[in-house]
Image (cartoon, rainbow over all chains, first blue to last red; front, side, top):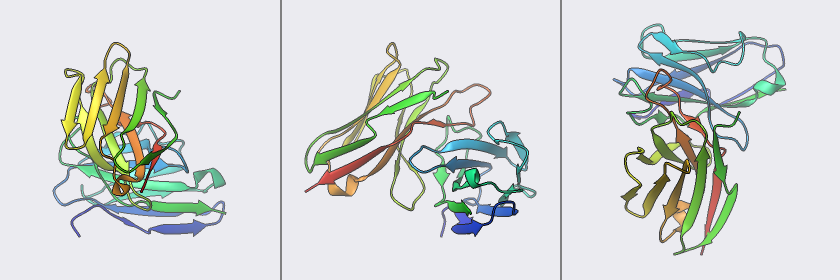
Length: 116
Length: 114
């Protein structure tokens, strides 16, 4: 499909384990965003990439969270030493323009992370 | 600090009725206000958006009303249909250094009954 693709769709892990979540944006979209959505809440901003660089990572909750986008396309969100409070749906979005203020964000279906 | 407050949390409307969802914001630097629609198991999708230079924007059955002085905006869904049953999120962002971020409300679960 032509939309934003996220894998895995579901991930169950144990407390303390390491997790990687992958996002494949829409082809040609230079901006990529990660959001986290807890049950019954709106998406919460984590990090934004413009090309290969993280332009804004102010939403990452702590240093256990890290994201990369080495070639300016696919991005990986990495979570170390997972905690039960990390359980949420992790949403990836991409857009044509630099800013969420001027361009529509296209979201993927998310990766549901459950930490036991 | 919740910068965008959304109400109601849930809403039940009969088919053909008007659905109204309200949002209020605190940050006066916000200058872009989109609404996103989310179906279960799917990501949010942009429905309609407004900037503060206009007080109303209409696209089909969906209208945003914006009150800059009150720092409030609302979504009206006219002639609501069962297919509109979804969760709706208001959001806001600035055109300054944090233009990359959308701040979302907590969502309204809309159910349109027959």
